[in-house]
Amino acid sequence: MRKVYYDILFPSFKMTAIRPAQEDDLASILEIYNQGIQDRVATLEEDTKDMEYMKQWFTNHSTRYSVLVAEINPGEIGGWASLNPYSHRCAYSGVADLSVYIRREFRGMGLGSLLLSDLERVAKINGFHKIVLMTFPFNLSGQRLYSKMGYRCVGIFKNQGKLDGRFVDVMAMEKLL
Ligand SMILES: CC(C)(COP(=O)(O)OP(=O)(O)OC[C@H]1O[C@@H](n2cnc3c(N)ncnc32)[C@H](O)[C@@H]1OP(=O)(O)O)[C@@H](O)C(=O)NCCC(=O)NCCS
Image (cartoon, rainbow, N blue to C red; front, side, top):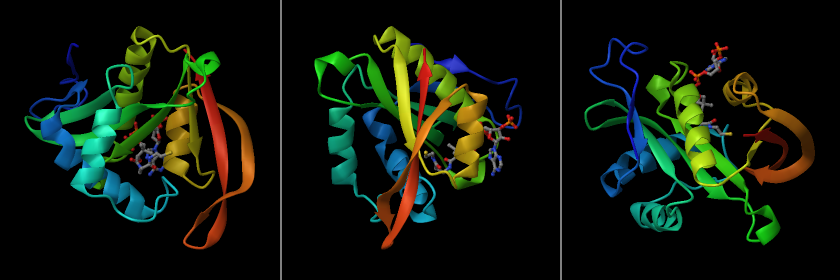
């Protein structure tokens, strides 16, 4: 798959490329994911993950469930996004779930938007007609990103999950590609 370069948008970086993740990127992907877990705005996961978990996760993300990284300088990963299985039922084979995580110091700089744009392009190539996602209504950065990218709020599940022992609401969003 091709790399997409964004030098004009990020002149302070030597190079910004959105490209498929490789096994060598897993340490960075893990670190960025664990920041998202610790920040308590992105996921119901409470415990940070280890490399064994991440390798299994990457194995499960075979060709159709692509993982993209934003390489902001050679070898430096600023964020990642993935297509995840939504359902094992054949009727839903055209639907993917998504994840997107940006390293703390690079949030709000446009990387999430770039990753989602390219992830949607890849999703279409991989035969998906729709992306769905679950997010917290209080994740304002996430809400801004998804609204800007054309995701529609389907509804809010009240008291859907527990985070640190407290119920939290979860918002379902979708985008037809
Ligand atoms: C949510 C997240 C992926 C957004 O990625 P990002 O690279 O920071 O987003 P972008 O810079 O592309 O910004 C997208 C939009 O959100 C807005 N935005 C970004 N950060 C913001 C912030 N801290 N406060 C308010 N708005 C914000 C931007 O202004 C932009 O809208 P605009 O172009 O109309 O101005 C990123 O903040 C992140 O990784 N957060 C922690 C993990 C997480 O929450 N993942 C999503 C799980 S559902």
